[in-house]
Amino acid sequence: MKILAITNQKGGVGKTTTCVNLAASLAANKKKVLLVDLDPQGNATTGCGIDKAKLKHSIYDVLIAQKKLYEIVVKCEKGGFDIAPSNRDLAGAEVELVNEIARETRLKQAFSTISGYDYVLLDCPPALNLLTVNALTAANSVMIPMQCEYYALEGLSDLVNTIKKVRARLNPILEIEGLLRTMFDTRNILGQQVSDQLEGHFGDKVYKTVIPRNIRLAEAPSYGLPVLIYDKTSKGANAYLALAKEMISKN
Image (cartoon, rainbow, N blue to C red; front, side):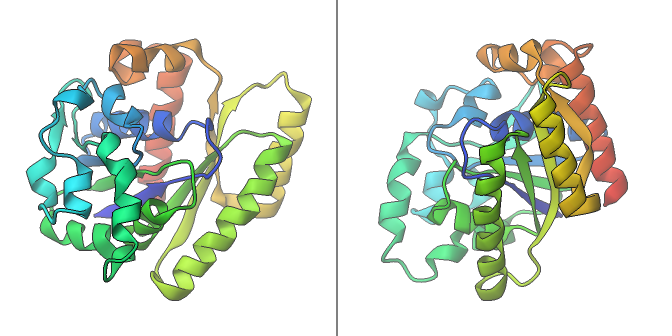
């Protein structure tokens, strides 16, 4: 079971878009996938067509109330994968976890109650907080979605340092799986320059697949669908299918 934390403390870089669409693309390649929504905003949950207001249980109950992970999992019927959903309850989890014993390993402990998945994708909040640390402690590796712009490089160094600290103190097997260039516009010269810098510095850690700016990718969440279901002929759908195949061949 490959557990992949998809994280970047910078917001708006395509983390949730990547989680939902990569999950659907891996499922289309006959892989069994669980998506875990660790963001209190619950965008991955609504992006899978699930009403947050009607949830009886969420990932909050796993982290705080000691519920078993399999007890809260629901199906993303259209996407062909499972999801551990989130809602606003999760916003209080960090405060409640502060004084708990083994607070950084709650999520890791929860994974001991499930099996049978090829991939578990962790959609992290846009912050280097206790929820993100739980994800990094539970994961085998990290995918970093990022836009090719100047400020993205500054934030990347902070994230890499956090990953190093988690590896040293909590999770010695944690590694960077890859950097994913998202919302890429080939007409943007600065974007191409940053992309070249990434490849020069990180080498084969940069995915060959690039996710383009695509209106269908932006529209799909409002219908509660992965883009592969919303418009399977779109550039966005083809890009995430290519990413899934690249990941499968890499692993």
